[in-house]
Length: 115
Image 1 (cartoon, rainbow, N blue to C red):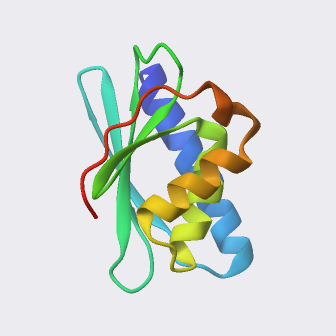
Image 2: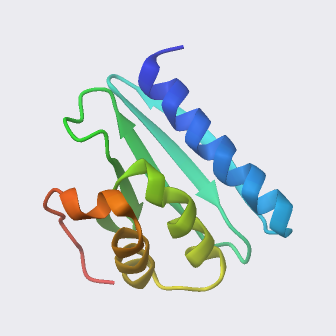
């Protein structure tokens, strides 16, 4: 298994374990291709998002596609997913998770589609 696929799986398993502890719905499917691995995440009420882990990302950050394009340090993914599962809008969850994470100050630029 390639490093980026293993990393995406580890991140998703960490989030899934925490969701199970809290009785929240979290299912995921990995889709590796080239130097990227996408993890498609299903939450309750037909909600969800996708995150990608790239082999060559210079920051080691992940990209969230929900429906816009957000970047987070991997340490903020759990917080982001919990906020989304509790009904937060994608942009609000991104801002909150990024600002609460100690690694969030070293953020690369983000592209954002309208929500």
